[in-house]
Length: 487
Image (tube, rainbow, N blue to C red; front, side):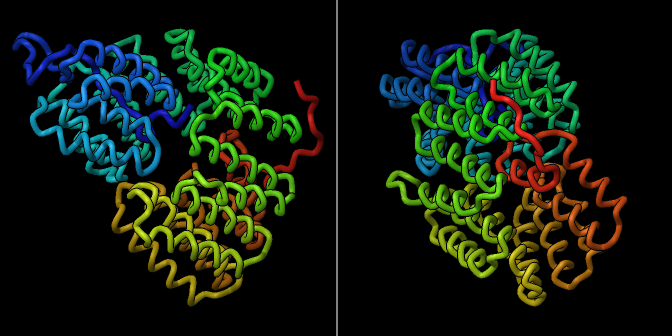
């Protein structure tokens, strides 16, 4: 599953110590781990394995046990922060970083790099992970972490180089093969992704995530029956692995079997144990409703998430931007602007963690300029472009923000009725930005360039993406004409 390196990284365990230790000079450096409790380290190791296989809630339980046994176990607290979503996870990482000064240098570097990742300080995190690989050159997880961070920045060649170094150091590093598979998938190479995930599954036959990743590659290739079987196997391997049922839901939605998709999402929701995971499932359900033409149901689902007592501010803001997109797509532009404004107010309130704030601000501005452009408000759209340019300058290493700037420039051209110019800007968006690429299709079509519109549509449809917005976009770009029989 792709979430693995969006903040989930790992370090190696070279031993247990009550203080700083150094490896013998004739051995390559690895990242040490510092704890006074062997029992705490056992829980740490169990949690690390669970986390590497995207079983975050179970991993957090093990890290909590480790910290309880040794409250000064700084790396366990850092891992607890990684495994815990939202502001609480950030708090744990910050606490670990503040306690890391006396640790061995590479152990401290890892914690600092992880915190930078969580704060969306992507350039800083790459610098720290690179330094880590130089100072711990035999630690495969250091290279895997660097590769994952480079992947977030869409520096594909560099990411692949680091990940392959990880597999060279440890041919049994399933985590690295998982990341290599997603690098293939992001570049449209479903064959390469399938092979990498097969390798991952062979190394971790009892874990659900390899089957989930394998299912996602099969889904990307449109091999739906095989994908469904992989997801079912993942679910059978762990009843708490809700992601597998979510994956099967996508299979059913893409084939037009909406009822079976809803049923699978219900099973996913029942398997969740944390509000953030439940919210993620509900978000997919909302976009699935929009994809089948039921905007009212989509809004109802997003409203319900926002009203739940344990929904965190970042999820509240996410529901606002989701509602804004529904309103844009149903030509209720003033309501879209109101929802975007609500999201931006939450960002400005300081209640969101830094990474979440950056993401929500970006999404809110996307919805705002889409509404402004479709209303023909060029002056307002220009002001939003100015805001995007400020965000792009502040986050030069964030490919999502940079892609959104191209989207904004395209929407400004739409507002000015320059459709050919709009299509040219939209074409510069990230290939993963399906909503922007759909605007490219529409702009080229309206500009009368049927060949360019069809080429953009073909590119958009080449690989099925396991993403709620893509689910909606695909329903517009290639409506399913007839539902398939549910398995």
